[in-house]
Amino acid sequence: MSFFKRNTALVEPSAALPGRPEPGYAVPADNIVLGTPQTAPVPDGFEEVWFGTGCFWGTEEIFWQQPGVYTTAVGYAGGYSPNPTYEEVCTGGTGHTEAVRVVYDPTKTTFTDLLKVFWETHDPTQGMRQGNDLGSQYRSAIYYTTEEQRAEAERTRDLYAPVIKPRGYGDITTEIAPLDSFYYAEGYHQQYLAKNPNGYRCHSNTGVPFPAEA
Image (cartoon, rainbow, N blue to C red; front, side, top):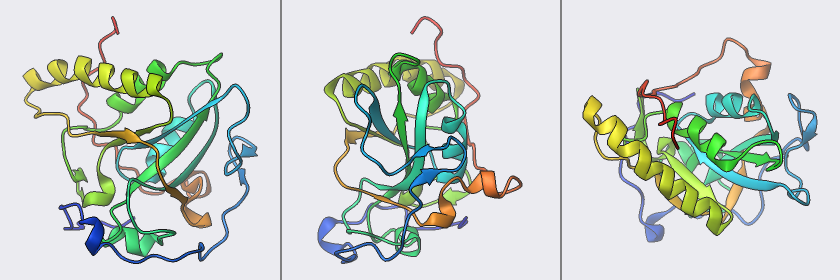
């Protein structure tokens, strides 16, 4: 992964890179860890959300291990430039953050369970960074697909904020927004840590557990 990117201001839409009308690379159809389709539409009865917690390699590894998760894939969300490349996203010029698609079975897990993992496995107060990874492409984000997800994301944020603030952390900066456009990342990024077990992981978490009563 890229280190020490300094593009810590989110680009204005009018200044974003132009992107391209079609993707410039192919994305494997299946998740090699879970053995499920990673780019197919969400199956009936399942739900989808995209999470950003910094470097998407480690984020995807965390979520493919969660009970009830049907599939995962890494990509770029929350930006402006159509069909960006990884190199373009890393300039900060596309407005995207590195994010992970999580498709889950709500009969086997809950969105609250996934949010607990989300809040506990990164530092949601760092703004445009996670640890040594600096840049708008590393910002914390939840891109929801239902109003119920939005409400629960906001509820759990408001529960976690007063728990971590007395520990010396600032305000939560997590972007909570509807999933608009998203683009799958290049094939070599998909399930990267399954292919490269000793690869880079950035988990700049607070170490503060999410409130059990939630």
